[in-house]
Length: 516
Image 1: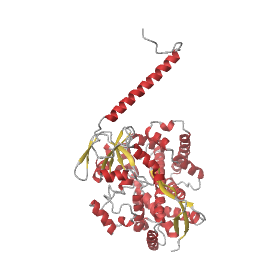
Image 2: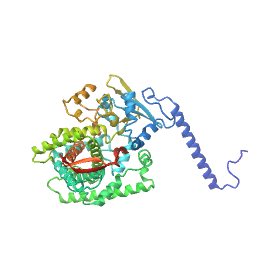
Image 3: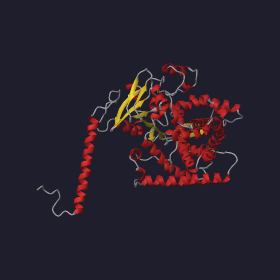
């Protein structure tokens, strides 16, 4: 007779509980055994160049996730990715836990992944789920395949130059209002990142759906609560644990309440617009409504608001960090703004004026090179095995389910493609200059395609990039025209990663009237 596995007097409930615990432990042990066996096996990507794992279990996660989380203290952005690119080349293999990544920076390989064979490399399903949950539905950042193509086809006509040029005067008015109120009355150092946050949120509210966030502080507060950066453990949970957003966590409850407040505000605006049936479109929502449902329009509004606000305010913050210690650049910009304004009756609030601000545009482009607001492109995953072509004529085999890492933040500082890569040189974006020619000689081509991608590229690129660039040009030119900016003693301009963007830790700046 076999000995009993249970203590004398154990009840049926005790036995059931013990069996459940035993089964759980056994299952966990089996899973751990299989996982360890998997890690011991040679992987098809192990022959690619790349850093050796620093941990048998974690792989390179300490170098990647750990470094990113420490950028705000070490200031070592965009490491470790830049060092890996320069050491191992345009295709780099690394591992995080059991996930094998291929980091791609070779231009021809990127063209293949993002354009030529783009359908084979959709965004990662968990990342798409995260974006759909955050933005109240499936939109451009979370759709894929035919659905994404249909959304782009419907939205693209509303982001042409002909449509966007009508919003440029609004950018100038919003920037001038900031000059006349916030900046003109500043007696102490300002949190300029917060100033830009309010300015760009106001601009996106007005241009996107005709809403004045400045006059509705409760709506602005709800948006800020929804977009507030979460602790790393919550971010990782949202990204990698299915249905994590429904866990009973107070921070997530606060986000959900804010989402519902904004949802109701936008739906009320949609209902009001549909009831009025205005003969002419005044904002992007007016343009969209004839071709979409209210629920889809809600998702698009939330998408453009989230993508267009935080990225623009972060980009402007880095522009003014760059200008704070470069008086010669400021003087050159100011002279250009003065000259262009004289051509347009004292205003720079037109598409034609923006097109003439070539040096100012170059300053912003160079800023986005050195401080790429979104330093990584949303992770792709290979749906099927693929042969990846490289610029040297060779190919790399990519197995199904390989995670593809694309890191423009590091690519933009890769000395293989950029002369004097760590220096702030706006002239490199002015065609025909010696600096432009030096970069051209390195990569053997005039264009920056697949080497410079601050707004990504291909079907998943930023649909509002012309909007964002025009806004940054007008705001920067308007503010620099009237004021001088300097970093306050307590400013901390190291980058802190607030997925998916980088912000300065503390952008305190002093402001005074320009003397030139």
